[in-house]
Image (cartoon, rainbow, N blue to C red; front, top):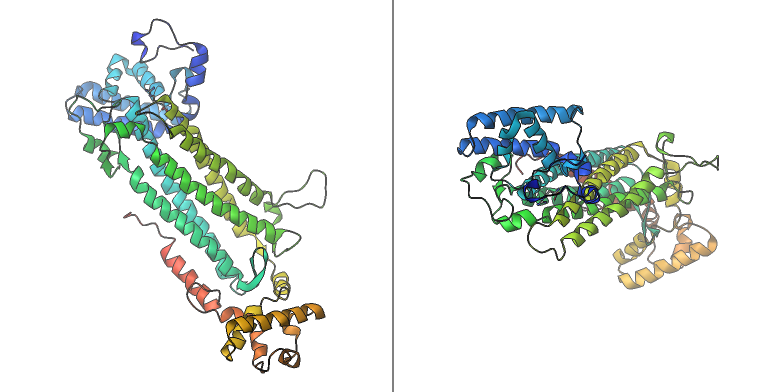
Length: 465
Ligand code: ARG
């Protein structure tokens, strides 16, 4: 349909259909309708209070807007892309419902400050949703860390055996990452939570509007200070996408760890059948596709961040239609991150660590080598020399095809006279782990303290923020 546009006054011919199809945003910005209507309700109320529009028609508009909200909710109002965008679709429908009086709603407002306000409302709400999902994810990690506190596995650097760690310590590393993400979102919120309405198209309005009233009504903490910046600023979207990119980095790293744990090389963790997929050709396959897709979907989120950075770069002041390109990257990022957070939560809750496999794995790789060197240091050997001696012990054990705990005291004594009876304790993997008692370390007590700290501090929603 080639409807008459609200801006058609100065035009003598209708929009070319190619341009109409090329420029419409309704097919994706329809999802801003709850924010758009909430904003219009607040704006209209302000227009009445300030005596800018007659109370009679203002009330009529408010009633009709509430009806429109219900019609869109229920699907009975079909949104036609010919209306270009959600703002014009709602306005056109309003005028169709109550006649020309509906046209008063757009007094003292432009689509430029309107769309900026809708977007800020949307990002604000979404930040809260994602913070909640992050907290739920952290809670799932913490639960598994508590349940499996007894498990020890080889910790890796360079994907090679390093030192033994508690499995819970590894899981709690992710809790720290997600907590930082949640904190970054709380911080970004400060810069989103500012109302641009009243900036008009570029320079404000000649009407005596009350910007603070509208901002308060919509739950914003402040109002923008420069109308030109306000209509052309999308920093808050970029910042949001940057934080979500980091969320994806963390989810993707977890996905990769899970894929490695689950791989035939390590096989330290089993996924339930309900969280794995098969192969159409190879009957024996059980694949961790959920985790692989989290890793894969990270790419599109980074792409969206770069798309928007590129749209903004070099854009002349102030509003340009380029800015309409902010929405698809934003919406797809939000949908992707929601999906990945939910999938990650299912995976962490569903995975079963394999205790015997982990115990077996800690016997490989000479994980106690550092402890052996530290033992000699305590007996008075300088660390560099102790490192050298422990290295020679490892080389000897390798040659003999044995682990460090398989060596006898006599064999050890050949490398240093300082080795005594008590060295055998040092060769116990679990003891070595639990000797690491300080804050942030992998010993049982330290990990339990971290878990308690995270439970007390990371999972609560702080309404004051
Ligand atoms: N659909 C447009 C967008 O998303 C709304 C603002 C249009 N403003 C304009 N002056 N054409 O950016």
